[in-house]
Image 1 (tube, rainbow, N blue to C red):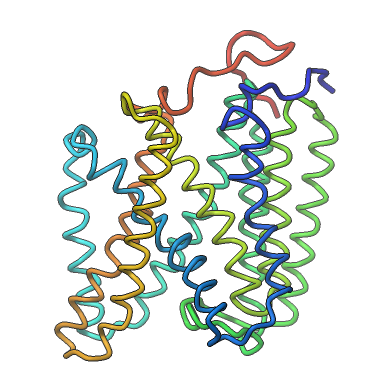
Image 2 (cartoon, rainbow, N blue to C red; image 1 turned 90 degrees about the horizontal axis):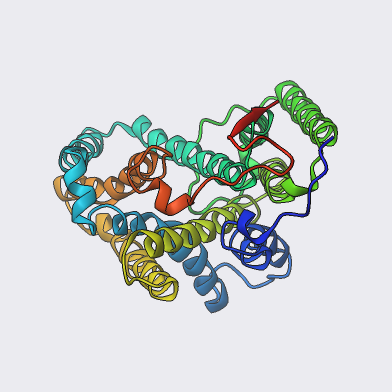
Length: 345
């Protein structure tokens, strides 16, 4: 067991624990709790505003902020031809899907979205490892396992019990009581194994990483395994993911652009999310009044930014990206460890 000082300000991604709590730790659990206090009917004004804030602003809105690091940055666009051919290919694929009524293809954005969601959780705990100066392969494994298993469990639950307005048919449900029990058992074993692992290697200087993995494991487990509708299943996870994305996007903009302070970066990020989140909400109603050709055009326009968000994020947030050192900062020397970065079990 290592002994080190409590995580210093340099080990928190936003510079101190309070800011990290606000951007990473509070949004998901907060929405999970307030969902039980909302008694308004679905069509009420309060619920309309609530749905817009979560699904359009946090959910859809954060997708478009990826453009601030890509198409709004000429230097980034010049780095790869992907920024030219990717949107064209995706648009054509989903145009053809809608025109030929290939309904199965809509599973692709749904499952890409879950993969993207899990990848962000993995990346943030990896960022904490970098700040702490200790890379943990075991932590990498458990954060992925405890994100993935609850999502698997959702598939074995009976979908008829869900009241899903936003995404009613986008997953391959396979209700099976036996597989449900087995998958829940595996998840609980994984959770206990992670606790044993953390106790074995406990280092108070890694409290940031440990806390984030715990939040990810518990929030995914509660939402996917116990939630009965989109307020309980999706909304806390959207808040957990979208709010964190706003924070790290603003942070990355302030660190990669000269004379671009944090508050300005945050304002630009939130404004982009609000404008394009509202735009996406408006065009959702477009297909109800047009021919199949124009409906197919709409499908391409609607889905392309979503898929680009998933794809481009695999590029702009990697550790070997040209801006990575500016964004993530210099690697911290581990407390009571050698000065070089080191993997631990």
